Length: 341
Image (cartoon, rainbow, N blue to C red):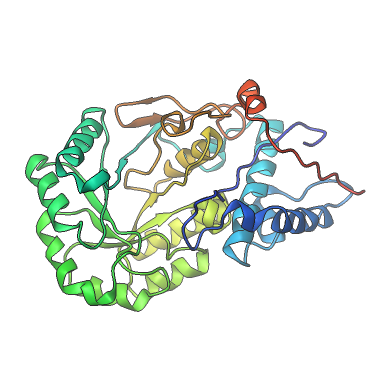
């Protein structure tokens, strides 16, 4: 909260986060206190630094936990900054299009039930999903992809392995070329760019990276070594909006396609993701579905969605409004960190 008004930010940490992303316990309170202290130290005459330098000021060059908190602080300052100047996030980002496309994530059904999988994918396509991101793992790869491709021949389909395969699985993974996938995402561990490069050299299906891309520097490294032709970029992991835009610009110059990935954001974080996805570098549908579908209670409004399309906001701020009654009902744990000046 500033004299000019309030700004809201959201940290991507959550209890069951998968490496390299942090859990809530990993960032609160130690990392939060440390980075808020750095932000206060950077204030001049009681004024916050510009949003464009907040993440760097708070140490977004450090760990993923630090980048996640820095992204939240950047978001809050940016929200207050935009509201005070009556500017929208889309305008600040130079977004010209009024809407963006969204895809749908379909997980592994209980008991690996192919019938249930086909039903879930069919429902998502019927609702207008512009692409299907299908989770796979060892023993659940060819069968589900074959079933979906046979039933939905024209669907835009990508397979997401979440790093579950070993490099020795490469011969079997090369067989996935048969399913006309838009990309094969993160087949190997996040650390192993070499294995991804080797697989990319032997497949016609583009390799996408997600968990491997934890910072702007890491994106540059992955692109430069040829480890991916598609990048799933997440501002909450990489240190904020400005970092993810810089990463997307680097990918575009190298001919690497991008899409905006998601965590389990509220309407606030997901509205920011949608605005970022409006940038020209993001040519693929992102993970931008309405949070009301997966949250029991969403403390922020979200953008209008209809049949796989999300309408972007031109309202001042980040594009989401607080639902105060929803937040109060969740009995939030509140800590107040007051500027010491």
